[in-house]
Image (cartoon, rainbow, N blue to C red; front, side, top):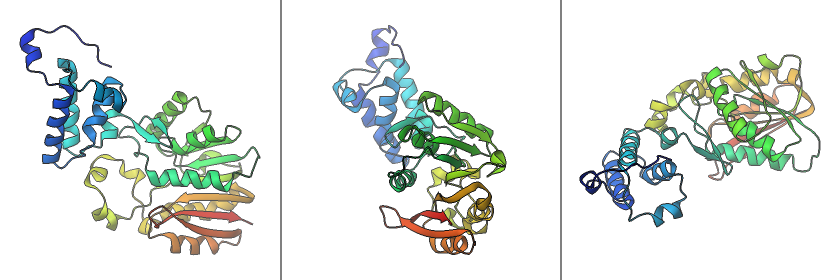
Length: 294
């Protein structure tokens, strides 16, 4: 929180109340077609308040430092920057994660992947060895470790910057996750896992026109786009999976809504695969590929 200082009456008379600041920000962002929910989030982050606390202070004036910081943040959002990058905060599975331009912003679809994992394994009391491929901010790996403390969770990413963010999140949540740098299975040569999870890049280049411009402009392309109609990384996982998954082990992946049929077919062509199913999300789109080894 910014610590207030004493200012003269002239300065304070030109500073808005919190309510007036929010009204200005909403109009400014609407004019620039930005995220109209951002102003409240920014103010709550600046002051470290809940929404109720913000409402309680509506009639009070901001201090000049707060007003300047707030205007700067609002202008960033008005230019299309996601509010999560402005506040460096994103909520995932009821927890707060640090995010910046080095990692993707966690999505609700990925929360559905976590819910599926927990549901599929709820009857198991085993100390599962779990691998998260392409961990990004660490949201999946850290959440699974917190929800299933007995699991041994390893998370890999090709980006050193992303692992720095993931490690920061693990420390803030006091979650013990083994983070390793490298592509796909390179960092875990010779190891086998009971459960492998991945939310890899899966957007095809010809799908860019369907995306929000803010995603294209601000989020890391390395974590978004993949060749072969977005299937490149799934196929590489399938081609190597037998070496790293134990007998009867399982794989869960988030997928694009057009990819279910092709991916299910590709995995079932592998002799070591017993089952492959495509699970729909809350919007009834194909969203999760769940595979079981023989």
